[in-house]
Amino acid sequence: MKAVGQITIKRRGEIVAKWVRLCGVPEAPGPGAVTEVEVEGGVAICVANLNGELSALDNVCPHRHGPLGQGWLEGDCVVCPWHSWMFHAKTGAAEFPEGERVAVFPLKIEGGDVLVEIE
Ligand code: FES
Image (cartoon, rainbow, N blue to C red):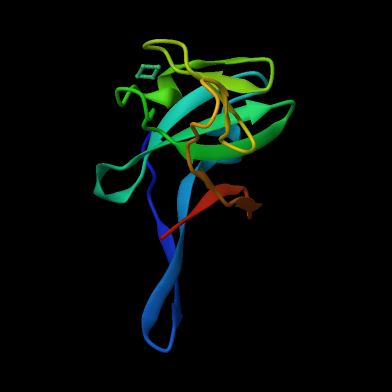
């Protein structure tokens, strides 16, 4: 899935945040599903739907850089497809192993689009 647009937020001429369109709401993963979405510059984002609520996580697993968006949901966690490390879909905190985490990006739905804020 590829993103197609972005909204840049500038303050005094400096870019402070960018809301990037990930996909349309109908293309977003359904409840219990996880997918990988590529945004500008080839950066991939892991998008998970936990109980009907979408969240966007760093797609790169801190273990050996596995693609989290190619994993699956187990309970409240996204499971890495390579060695099964588990990250809470909302907080990014690892269930296993403790102390690890991935970034979670702000996400919103606007005008039928799913947007994520990246720096
Ligand atoms: S790369 Fe994700 S658990 Fe190993």
